[in-house]
Each structure stands twice: as structure tokens, then as C-alpha cells.
Length: 335
View 1: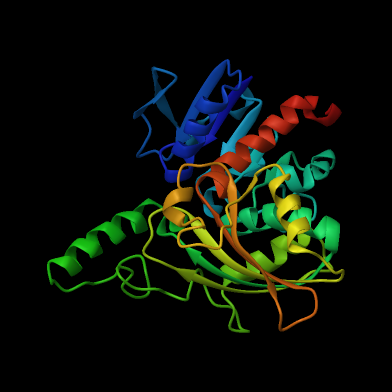
View 2 (view 1 turned 60 degrees about the vertical axis):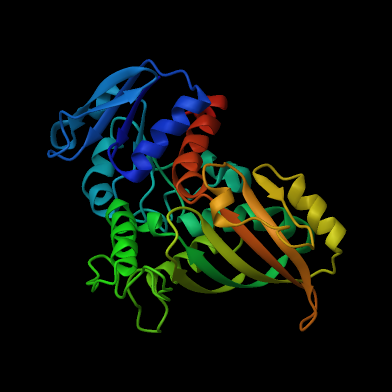
């Protein structure tokens, strides 16, 4: 199996390398691909240094699978060209709502991999990916009618430059110096910004609309979802306060059992001080953690959850590699 990673020098690209190394997928040749300014750099993989190729002239006919981890503009320009020669697993938002491109979280809707038309598979938004992992077993049992979700998202979801700026701003605040934000609309250090991505005409941001549209595409078009997405001064991991309304009645015991027995989920829910998961504890771990499980007594069949996951893993690199694993294990579904 020959594999390429486009955007290999970025946050998600490097995390994809880490996941591939831990998963020990049999790779004959690994090609690391990035922008011209990164071409020639060397990155270690399985004890060897691999040189980075220039995306502008890379030959995709050499690989079977190409992971795209370089953002929407790069995917728009190069993904379909690459898909003429290999299978593309794209981490950007560019193809997610294309009806001819499956949007996949393998634990939730792997059957959609039977319907690959453009040789492209889309990875969902990081906040959506962890959400649907927690929703799937509950939807199967109780049928979700409506979701109200508030996200508390780390700066790593915006890329390396915003991560660096958080550290720089934090030091400036501690030193009592003035701050001028470069990658955020307001100061991010010691603050919360209720604004991720651009605003639409109805007042929702693109990030909030992604969560609604992607959840409906992955799980069920019959689900109503409203979201408020907030950026916090956290380096890695996204958290979500999730309010659900089901069509059917439920018990908390059945909810906990369903979540604990679903691949990718782990319940940490003790009603004592510290009996829950925080973003710091989720960093570097593959699971989507669910805490603070309790009934919402203000509505019929209502439930509240706290959902936390490493956004660079579950929301990006890990999910992309698991898509590849699913395809490999199923012989590309006969393709």
C-alpha cells in the first residue's frame, strides 16, 4: 500500500503520521507532500527521515490513498486531480456537503463507503465527528428529535498559527503588555470568543451551520440541531454541552450502557468532585468521553450530556485513518 499525506507539515498532517505509526498499517511507500516552501524538509516516520515533496508537481498515480490535510483551498485545487489516480480522504470542508461524496465517521455510517462516486471521501468537522459518535447509539435506541449544542473549542482547531498566538498572548498578559490579535477577532488569552468561522445572513456562523448540516447528513435528516460555537484559550480538545430530546422514553442506565458499549465512546460519569472528563485529560486519547449524564426535566424525554474529545485525533487524523482502515479491511468494498 502506497500512501500520501498532503499537508504533512501541518497540525493534522503530523497527527496523521502519528496515528499511522501507532496503527501499524502496512505501508510500502509513504509520500509526504506539502507546499513549495516546505518541500525538501524531512520528517521522521518509523525511525526513518522522509523528505517532503512539492504538491505542485507531485505524481498521485504513485499512491493508492491520499490523505488531504491542508485546508479547503488546497482540496478545491488538487483533490479532484488526485482522485483521478487514487482514493482521496479529505479533512477539509470543501466536499462535505457534496451529495456525491460520502461524509463518514466509520463507527456511525461506514455503509456510506459503499457509495463512492468521485473517488473522494470527506471527513466531518472536528466538532461534528465527536458529537455523532456519542449520538449514534442513543439515536438507534431512542430516536433523536432535537439537539441543542454549545461547543467549547480549542485553538488547535484553527491551526498552528492560532496555537502559537495563544501561547504568545498568554505570556504578554502575564507580563502586563498590550495585545494585538492576529488570528482571532478579539484577545483569546484568558477569554472566550463566541465566534468561529464567518457569519451567515441569519446570524449563525459557518461552524454552527456545519454542525447542523453535517449531523443531518451523517445521522438523520429528521434531526433538528441548533449550535453555538465558542473558542476557548485551550490548546487541544473540544468540549460540547449537549441537550437532546428523544421521541421515545429512556432510562439513564440504558443511556450509559449504550454509550459504554459503542465503539469509540467511554463514559466517565461520577457525581462527585472531579468525576468527569476535561479537555486536558482527553488530549492524546482516541476515545470520545461522555460525562454529566442527567435528565432534562424541563422537556419530555430530555437528556443532557458533556462530550469531550481530542479534536486533532477524533475530529481529524484518527477518523481519516479509520476510514482508510475500514476500506482496506473490506477490500475497498469491492472497488
